[in-house]
Figure 1 (cartoon, one colour):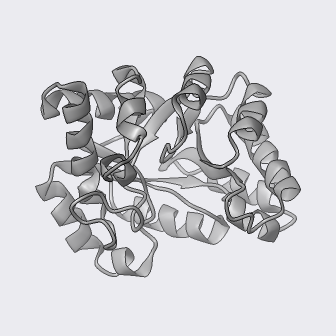
Figure 2: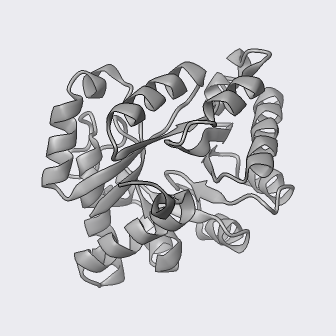
Length: 256
């Protein structure tokens, strides 16, 4: 069994064929999914899917791109949404200085406010980091009681080690499989008990599907690449990453 710890199932191409998407994933031994929100509307769609399917779980959060549009009562809305049992994490939150769709100051404010919620509720966070290593580390260091995952990791080993030292997991997506990627050199240094796998569907399709819309089932190709990097059987990677997901998101306390 594999767990796609980060997919956006509310996108039309996935949502409109959800049964087909889940069947194709199951055929590839991917049968547990976290539908990750980027804003409050997305979070409600994630929740709706999670309520309909017992192997889909949800998160609620405001992505850095959406930070500028967060309503005044967005924290209250997050608290309300987190009362549902199928909600397993806060996110996607974080910083993105590559595109700067929201002003960095606003990004940091919204990131910190969501970290406060995670601290209060004792839930893990799913965070986004693009070209913002220093500031992301600074924010995380201010919340030593919060744990979570560096989603779709794309930074260097030094940054990965900083996250690991704070107790965070490192999640790899399809970009791990790209030709000339530096990520295999990073991945081989990450302890296997701190690794997660994801697709970030519909983005970042792994090889040999690069450039095409992604689906959760392709988590398998990320896991296969990790097995190759670590020179261990695929089954070992599948078991370890799913166990890691269970430990971080508390799946052992939820019905599969």
